[in-house]
Image (cartoon, rainbow, N blue to C red):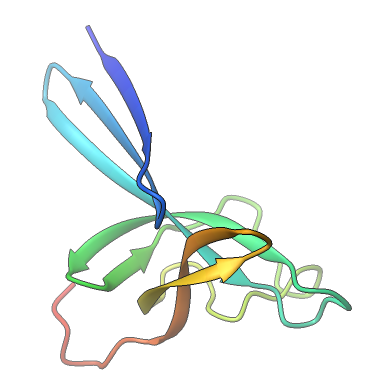
Length: 102
């Protein structure tokens, strides 16, 4: 049996999935699409690996020639809360230092 709980904490959307194997927590991080003419943000599932540091999940069908992300899937990024179109979102702002453990 599984249960899903979604919470919007103002800074991030967190999804908790309870299964027979335990609880899996996934956070939504917003990644900028720098080639767009207006500000566009791609919501991406990510896993927190340290406070403020997240690893972006792989994204099925990601095609950088069609939609370039500021930080591609699989990147380890530093995130901050930022105001975006009237809401505060958890936004990827830079690549994390290479010394952060996966």
